[in-house]
Image (tube, rainbow, N blue to C red; front, side, top):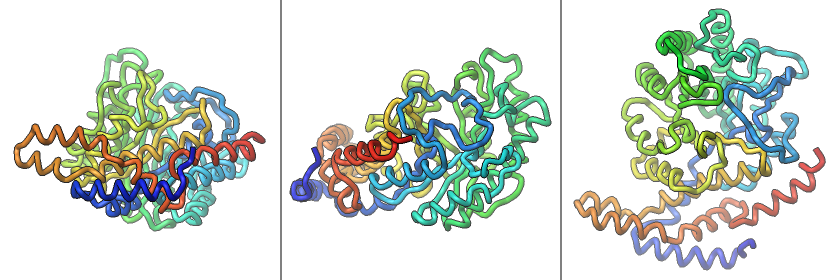
Length: 421
């Protein structure tokens, strides 16, 4: 049941006083949260389908399960769904777009031929919403990726095709950043790898390095564009060997001072990425963080407010890493309402950041004083502080539904719009 504004105000007043007693300014925490943009991933809205004319099957070790009705079929439908999701999420955010979501006018445009003009509709939409954009070359779901290799392919002609695609993607990213006045992060992820154990692990990585060097050869203004590279532990069809491993991209990013993408679902199922943030940022300029949730072998479940997410948020806030971190989402679930998936995942990411911003300074003071007993006691007690009352107040100040009242709006939109698709 939705909370009334009066009850929210009363609860927030009590929470504000309690936090103040512990040296926490809740107003400052909410103001800081309002300055943190989350990049919503377009591919949750249509099950990673894209808008190319070929209509090829999803590949590259990516699988979307479920057949919940109402997925977006056109760019206009996808933008309308994003508008609805954004209206339910507090703050000002961004859009993360894949290259095969261009608007091609019903004409077949292969990926080595994409141009900024194919993304003008998205840029116009983002500009009207006062949003920045991020971008990704799409190195999967294509005949030239059918054998599981792209930038590290043994055939030069295939490599050259994907090199050109990535070069054009960078140019499109720079166009977006310049048009919107906010630097676009263009992230390179490829599915390359072997299902079974390879004999030669080195040669594909040498080819990948050479391809990346060619992709990044042309300097682009950091005011408009930033390059990122993303690793993965394994995927469907690349269980035994992935060319672009964490070690490979960590080395490449450090050597070439690129943005390093850390995806929360791309590591061992028991491995968290929170501890990697401070280590990596000692040696790379910035981090692209893909917030996801791994479950067993699958890396892309809707983000929940779990310990792994909270650990990431705490690390970013405690060590003042937010200014050098780009936060985006990366999950896809076709078993539930897709707008609800965006809303749940983004709101949970923001909740984790708010909890971190509300952390009492006494924890750090205890650690500096060598009082490790006090640190642990305070850390556990802080988990029971009334952050939920601050969250509800924040939602109200941002003009979006507090509590779970957003769900009624999603169901109303489903009845009026999604059910008719």
